[in-house]
Length: 273
Ligand code: RIB
Image (cartoon, rainbow, N blue to C red):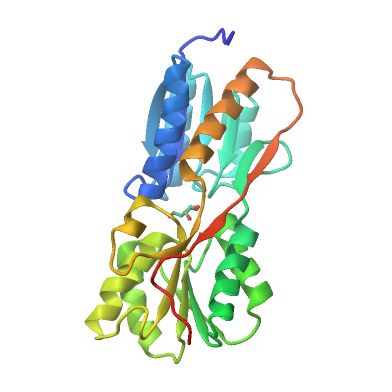
């Protein structure tokens, strides 16, 4: 590759590095960048948009060659000012949604939601809950839209942060409903539900069928192994890095939007009703 630039450094912004989804994503990104002799600089945004714009500004000042943004903390206005106006190449993905001008790579969240609903429906579940953040980012909200397309009635929406602790707390609200099926909008929430439901002496899948989302490594190590919607997380990271390198090489090429498929991994956390 003929990439002639200044610092051979790429800035990567993620919302929560403690979530294994983002560590696997960054591994995919870094593996590709490293092979191309780029250094990856990681910023954990943690929902803090001040921190995120400060980091973007500082990285830009240091002459970083490009950016990968998976966090929604940064506003479109800041992207315009800090990246577009300064001609910095960048790719946005996951929790950050694209405006008309940005290159982006997505996974098929709508189909993912549909797959989760179809799985529960075919097992005979009629009353279901979706555990999801109250102010869900666009990608995550799309999973709920897909879910609703298949399962149009009897959905209890239960709000939770995208974390194990959020899932654990959501269990209290779940047991107050009469649902039999649960769609946890990410695996971290599902893992939290495992512990939270156990505190109420409920078991999975006997009392509740649980479907997660992401297919992080841990899914196969919990009891029962978690049925989930798999995102190609590592490949997503790799392709994001490749797309950015392409953009650095060809700054004038048209906007690129890529969408990767998801699929259901059927393990043991759901059962026929
Ligand atoms: O687990 C983190 C979740 O937030 C994933 O589903 C990912 O797509 C992100 O948006």
